[in-house]
Length: 161
Image 1 (tube, rainbow, N blue to C red):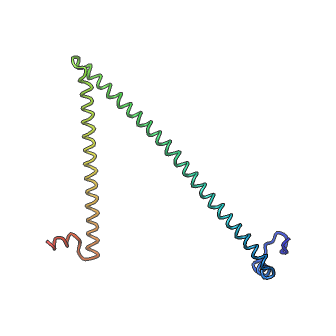
Image 2: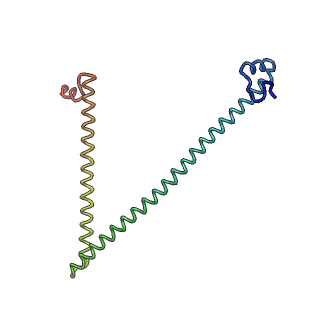
Image 3: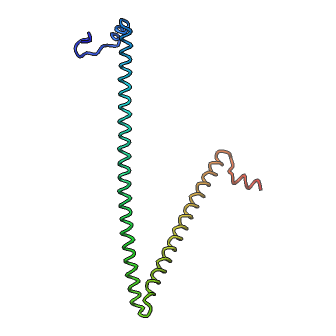
């Protein structure tokens, strides 16, 4: 029993009195309390590290699963595209009895032409959109410059000419 009653905690004042009465014991108690606090801190850090590792493992697992699913999806799409194009090429080859090679050549050339035309259209659209965004951004900056300084960089450039 600690002299403070069964199950009761010592008050700060009573612990202070005990420390004055037995300074060596108080230092021992402080060392024990610090050691206990260090262990709790190590325990806390360990749980946080383990939680981060578990989250990392989950992220890696789902990344791998989604990567595999993406590869399978692309393989299915590619297979379907190949089967479709082979079917069209075979139909055209049958239509050209004297030149069975002409169907695959026409389908291949048309597929490449459509693919490249699509890529160039997308590229042009993306660049046009980016240019409009930048023009707006620089226009907004020049408006802010006029508000802050009474003139913008563009106005300064035209005055310098």
